[in-house]
Length: 253
Image (cartoon, rainbow, N blue to C red; front, side, top):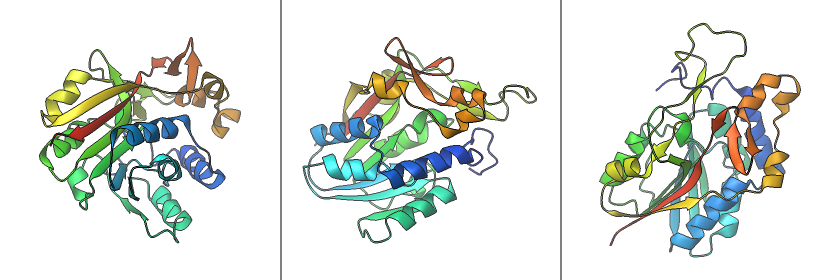
């Protein structure tokens, strides 16, 4: 994996990077972070050492720490964007329970340091495949819990969103964003029989989602297609329906 991989829009979307850093600095509690933390608090127990793939600067950690009541919590964020990793390190420099490293959910074994809980929110749809993280969870007995916010539907669908309004060169071969949907059967197939799984409904405020914007929209109308919005109580990005689910797993005793 490198920054030149055609699916990797993260490194070039500086506006998104700045938005995540701003959310951390301003203490924004996103609905998705609250929903994920509530799922973890409901289904998991004991001390958690959390490894977060696609962590950004760690803007979910304060919400996880606030909501989780069943034990102590340590946190290590993994992201492919160096600026986000450095922002997280700087922000949490005085917190010995929080660490960050460069890494990828496509190569989970290279980032794992014995954590018992793997999480990832809003990242899995945007990488080419989730088979590596599912097989890693299947094979790594020391991991006892996982929690994902991902797109789950009745079938597996690869979605490539073209990111330019007027440049159609190499369309769907470069300058695109994945928004991939997976079925429950797919998850169960690759993760194996050792997990008790729950596919929980997404939890979001329609009013907050309707007010959700990104600063880039002020100068680039087409950028709206990367920002979640609500239609008839459902979440879309541009023309793509986003069937978000909270998927949690506990390893069977």
